[in-house]
Image 1 (cartoon, rainbow, N blue to C red):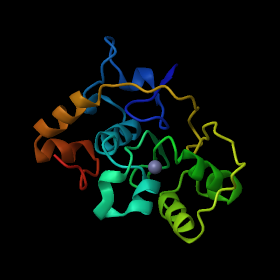
Image 2: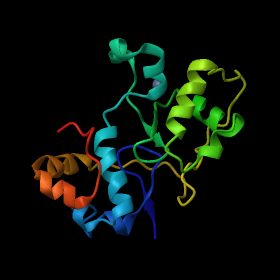
Image 3: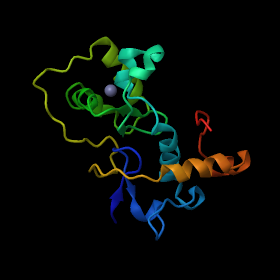
Image 4: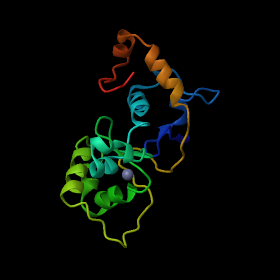
Length: 174
Ligand SMILES: [Zn+2]
């Protein structure tokens, strides 16, 4: 089964679970619960700024933040990064013990705390290949469009329909 990313690099999905015959995203109700939660989160996350940019510039200078290109971590504890700042995360993940939190929602918080307190990455640190923060998934960047339809689908759903999907939409901006 081939794996695909949608919207942001990072999270990967089994193509057959999330895409229909025609290659478009299936309705959420037809997607199994675990990928469904992530897909729904992606609709919120694609427009968000990079966490590191945000930590540097702050909410009031949000316009200076780059848009995230990659997502690591678990739903509701995601780390979002632009291409420039993926390096900070990879350094923390590999060299500062961040990998111990793979699969844990606390990862986001721990990474933020480290970045604010220390956040120093040696100049000669390379290591740009993608890492796997989700033990069950393969890694390979391969972005994909298609979240626009999802946003429309979510916007058109009633409260009850969203509840029935069992996803936390509390910070979804519809
Ligand atoms: Zn950034």
